[in-house]
Structures are given as C-alpha cells and as structure tokens.
Image (tube, rainbow, N blue to C red; front, side, top):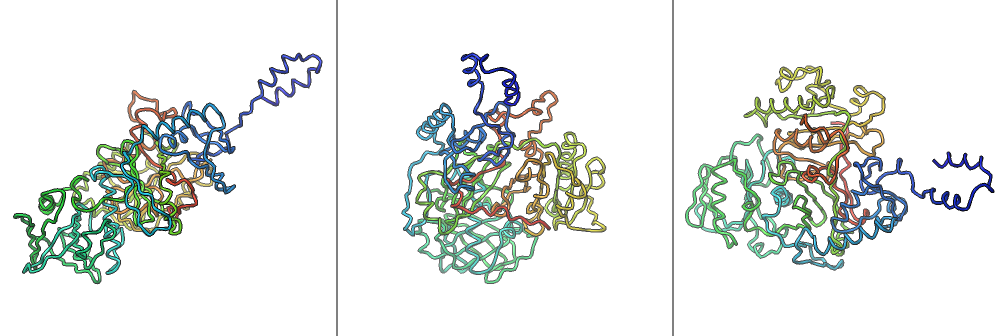
Length: 600
C-alpha cells in the first residue's frame, strides 16, 4: 500500500495537490505495525495463530500479544509481565495495551473482577515476613470436599515418600506401579496383639498395600501435616501385588489381610501372623473406621475427596480458580503444582503442571503472596494437518479386560483414520521396545494389535530416526505428536519422557504435542514432563484428542474446519493444555520440565 502510493506521488506535481488532499494523505497513513512475524509474549505462539475475529494487541513496551491471552490474565487476578522485556532487556514491564481505549477497558475490568468476581472466597491471608522461618500453610479456607482427589493423592503420597527416605528409597513410579492408587488416609491409634500399648500412626490404604507410619505422639499437636515425622513404617498386602517388594529398614509383611471387622470405636484386622486394632481418635467426623471397613472389604472401592481423609490437616492450597476447574497448591515449601480438569463433573481427564522455586527465593515469594498468583489455561491446541501416534501398552495391566480394551483402542485408531487416513502409528511394549510401526492404512489391526507375539528384531525407538525415515528432510507443516502410555512412569522406558523437539513444525518454538497417561497416578511427574494429561481409562482417549485438537465427528456439524471461538460453549467446557508461569517474575522460579530424555 505504501509503495503504490509513493509511485503515484512522483507523477503528480506539488502545486496540483490541494491542502485538503495533503490532510487526507496524512489521515490515510497508518501507524499500525505488521504482526505476521511476531510472537505472542504470553503464549509463545506466532501472532498469526489466532481465532476468528480475535484482535492483536500492541503493548506499550512495543511487543505484541493475542487479545484472548491478555483477557485470560485480566479475568484471573493480575496483569502479566512481558516475557520478552524480561528476557532481552531485564525489565519487568506489565503487558499494558498501547491503545488508550482498550487500556481503560482492561483496567476497569481488572478492578471489577478483583472486587466482585473473585473465584475464591478469601477468608484469611497470611503475610509472612521474608526474614521469618515460619512455613507457609494456606492462604484460603476451603473445605476438603473442594479439593480434587488427585491433588489429595499427590500431597499424601509425596509426604509418604519423604518419610520413607530415612529408611529406604521408594521412588514415585514404584509407589504408583506397585502400591496402586491411594484410597484413604487417616490418623489412628493402633495396637498389636496382645494389645498392651497404643501408638499413634498415620495409615494409608492403597489398592495393593496398607502402609502404617508410626509417628511421635507429640505430632498430633502439629499445625502442619508436613511436620509429622515417622518413627517406623510397616507395609501389609491388601491383595496380590505384581512385584516382590524388598525395602531395607521397613517392616514389610508379605501376607494378605484375612479379615476386618468393626466393633465399637475400633477396627480389628486379622493378619496371618498377628492381629492389629485401629482406634478412632478425636475427629470432626464420626464413623471414620466404617469407611476403612468398606475399603478393606471392597478393594475396588474408590473414595471421593469428602471421605478420602477425615482427621488429617488442611492442604497448602493457595488458590482455586474459576469453576473449580483449576487449583494451585504449594508442596514441600518450594514445589508449586497446578492442576486443571477437562471434565469437571467426572474428573475423567486432568492436566498437571508444576514448578520448582529456588530456596533463596522462597521466603521472598511467600512474603509477596498478596499480589496473588495468576494462571493461563490455553483452551485448545491448533487442529493439526497430520498426526504421529505413539502408544505404549503394559499388557499385564489389561489382562482381565484385554479383549474389551483391544476393541476400544482399535475403535480409537479407526476413528482417527477417518480424519487422517495415512497417519503414522507406533506401538511399544512396557519396556519401550517397538512392536508395531507403520502407516495406519497399511496395518491389519485385527491381527497385529495386542497379538502377544514378541518382536523378531526388538529395538528402541528414537525420535530422530522417525524424523528422518518417516518424514524425511521436508519442513513439517503442522504435525501433532500424541504419546499415550499405561506403563510405569520409568524415565528410561516410558514414551511419555521422550524429547519430541526433532518434530517441531514450521513456525513453532516447540512441538505440537500431547502426552497422555492412561490410569491416574498418585504422584506428580510434571517436574520432568512439562505437561501431562491423565485419563481414567482407554475409553477417554478419543475424547481427550477431540477436545485437544477440535476434532468433530458429527456429519451435520462442520464448523470445526474454521477457527474456533474461545468464547463458545464448547471451548468453555474444555481446559487443556498449557499453563503459563503462575508467578509475576520469571526469574523467581525454575521450571525443570524440559529435561526429557531423547533415547529410551
């Protein structure tokens, strides 16, 4: 436009241009900048990747961002800090729009949201002096019923692992793989036959193991659960375990619980070599032991957050965001976990991400907590033009329902084939060996999927080899990488720990990827995997992919081919896949989620 007008100006003499025309020329010239090659300072994606009708905002600092990205921050609690000002100029400048009208609108909305639409009813705040040694507990008063069960499991599993460090080493993946999901946690007085002396203990009932952590009696007066320290740990089978557990300095009794019965205020548990009694202590709720009796008799019974723990202390939850779909918690004084839920009704699909705070910065961060942290949840990922699907299956976990799960996986693969007829599929074993690898249109899923046959020439998967041999040297336009696994979260064998950076598509700073764990975990692995989605079972795999990549299988509804609207009802029902830094200054935390292994 400017070049075309400049040529016309050469052909017209200066005395032929009227004053009105000169004024019109000044009006036509625009100060707007081209945004085609810019990156959004909030989501790190190209500015050109925007929804239909979405505005591109130029900030006072000169950088640019998406309108929706900025609105998500303003709808939360605070104006964000421009990443690029911090990165290149070492200046902490807020993302304030350059346009005065938009600036006034956003500031007004920010003030109204803070006063009237706070998603958390803040009943109490604790301001901690940065020179104090006091530990931070909770900034909000919430009922335990409001906590996600996944966050409860993470907190108490993390505490149990830390307590066991004095006696042995129980890794997070061992706890998940061998112990099973954590079902109940409570404090009781216990006594072994001949029932002469009672001891205080924290009892944790997993799917496969009953863990009894005997603690000091003074611990009952602790204001924080993290201050309770173990004197001894005893482990008992609740049913047959898949592994032979051997831990030094831990009393591990390799026997099943024979019988459990409830009389009065005590629960009597018959073991093969002794008898254990559990007594209720003072608690806000009665009948706590009745829940445990149900747990012993029905080993598949899972308890929701209301009954998960009745007499353990409050969690260090910092903030619950809008619609309770996102929750923020501080663990071990320097670990921050943020958790989102796609399906807020059934919690069938959840998202985890965590950050680690430097020890030197811990008290400063807690001292400035009244600024209140903020979070951005990217609603969806861009719909890809092609998909690379990697599925890792531990067949021992699906033995009881192998045929049914095989059919579910096959249906999911065939459904994706309708959208991507030639997508590339890789099937791996629990140990990371390639069992099947080819284009979906050349595979016979009936005979090859979960056939049980050992590979003739087993080999480990290398992402760089897939890049070379499958996609060649051509530029990847918009490839989505989907990694799915139900196997143990071992860093050397799990596909979820792979580094997919060789498969970055054109115009992106990082791969368009989603990592899905089939089956919930007690522990949080987002310190190693930057983003991890957990689904309840294989039945939810296709749903998670449809939510993530805007796939629609309704023949009468074709609007998925166009850009999605972030304010639509469908978008509001989804909370996937990217959580930005919850802190105001990037240098205050260290995110170690990028240390994935390349070769497994």
